[in-house]
Amino acid sequence: MTTSRAHRLLSRLVRIAPEEVRATLLGFAWFACLLSGYYLLRPLRDALGLAGGVEELRWLFSATFVTMLLLVPAFGWLVSRLPPRRFVPWVYRFFALTLLAFSAWMALDVQSAWLGRTFFVWVSVFNLFIVSIFWSVLDDCFSNEQGRRLFGFIAAGGTLGTVLGPLLAAAAASVFGTMALALLAALLLELALRCFRGIYPVHDGSASAPAPARALGGQVWAGLSLIARSPYLLGICAYLLAHTAASTFLYFEQGRIVSAALADTAARTRYFALVDFCVSALTLALQMLVTGLLMRKFGLALCLALLPLVTLAAFGALAWAPTLAVLAGVQILRRALDYAIARPAREVLFTVISREEKYKAKNAIETLVYRGGDALSGWLSAALSALGMGLTGIALLAIPLSAAWCALCVWLARRQETLPSPHPTPPNFRRKNETHR
Image (cartoon, rainbow, N blue to C red; front, side, top):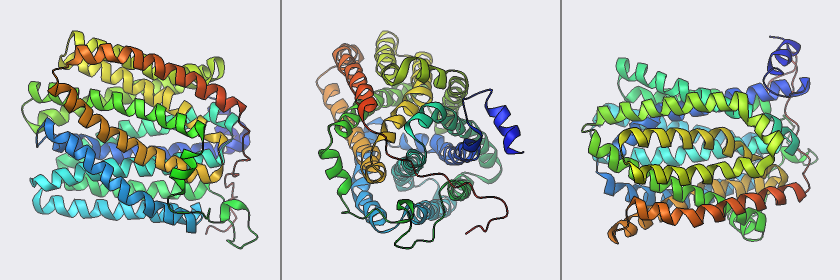
């Protein structure tokens, strides 16, 4: 398809310039590959995570956080010494190799309790790292104005992946067994890497090369120090902690309701896969028809604040009727609005920070802070349960917290508009007759 024809087709869905078409489509395909791979693994991860009982989940969340503590400095070391065009393949292929190892383990002993625990933790780590890197590159290559127009459409590629992933999982598991899921996810990760190479600019790597070709330098733990010195980044951390706390409380409640209603792993896997499919269908419709329009007409504040408002409604609905049907409804609506509207809006917040902050601070926020919030929220949920506070009490507690969360959304949106946008790294628009490196 020629660029002009692709531009005509895309311009019906999103405001896009002809020179933005190639990078936008590659970003769409990249995210589709990433989330197809993750959603191949997600239903199996959630089913195996419940094998040890709901009470084991907080230990798994804590183990995920500890794993993040070990990996973040290793990632910081790579980012400090290698430019993105070199460290992104290192990270992606490292995760691909681990997925191949899991595939072999499943072939040998799929019923192992330690396989289930390790797989749950590693898939949780894998998802956050690969998606965080994806958005860091996009925030580096697209300007603030471009992000407001195009990130909703690019995010729709990920949603397409969430539809294809469960379908691939069902087909592959039926024919080859569960070991094939990790194998296919590793293959999709390699395809995603091809899309990255098409987007990110090629340079000769010399000392005189532009900034994108050089390593970022700095310290291994620079991401945390950058966060500590920036009220804006601390505000994003607070937003994400509120998000993870709400998500974790709902995830634990989901575990209790699903465990009580569905007896075996196969039934639970089918339930999770059905919910994932419905979330993906609703998300895709919102991203194609609503996200870009909503962001242009009403701005970041409303797009960010939708998540706390819907979260409050979700807690109220479950407190009123904690059934499998209500759980499915609130999870589908909340997750769809998060993926379709809140997530692209949150990514626009990062377009106005420096390159070092985009790769180091952003990664620390979306891995260490995110999983730290998960772990802390898991233990807080256990403590509130021990004190006898049920969903009704948590729903009442969520009212003032949601109000504070909405106020934070307004502050972040206003602050984002006052920060100067750095010049983005231009995407790689190589012609067909140029040499591919």
